Image 1 (cartoon, one colour):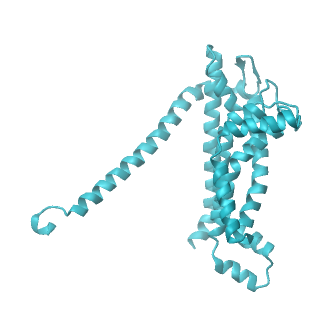
Image 2 (tube, rainbow, N blue to C red):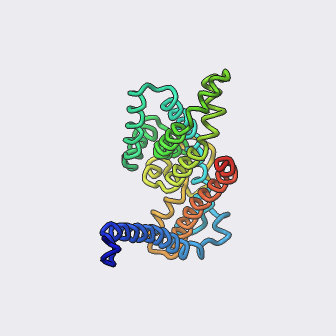
Image 3 (tube, rainbow, N blue to C red):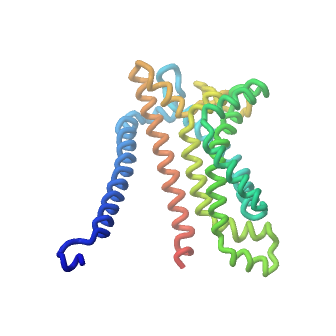
Length: 287
């Protein structure tokens, strides 16, 4: 009918409209991401001077060495907690939990992901800083970040382990492998790219949190120590949140520099990890 009339069928118009809408959405997403990066880097990169990496913050000026060290310590310790607990939870959910257990765990993980950060921060402030007597500390801040990072690692590991082909696991069992050996030698290597993606997302979440750290890690103008309790820790998001509202150009420059460092950390983490996944597993998956 369309050929006889020299026009396009209605389905063709609908298809073209959907293609146009999809391209417009893609351009919008890329444009928003580019705008954020351009805005932050345009103001932050000029403020990234060498002395920032070697000078601690003092008053409204100084450097960011203490905040950089504190951020890395908080996120790394939180990741260690999350990887241990998250992978254990995912393995139990996929391999050993009954059907009702799978539903309960996945539902609770989704609920945990939706809890407001300020609520968790206030809860940990009451439970750890006041009642347990830890004070503002490294371990309290790391635990706060771990709570927010945990759902992303659990869900990513859950999906990745679920997608491991049953034939591989059944073959290993047929050859006499025990459940622990199957998980270690079959499940984890196959699911590693998906698990690593979840860890990357969790790292970005940890780097960007502010509210729970205000209640748990506090703030300090000194370099962080390895003391687990009674030792406030500094972090980059506090600099962005606090110093941008100060009426001084020096504090604004610190805030822009801290924001730029956070963006660079997230970008480099994703780039390096994805490059590792492609190099390590890309060729094997294609074969």
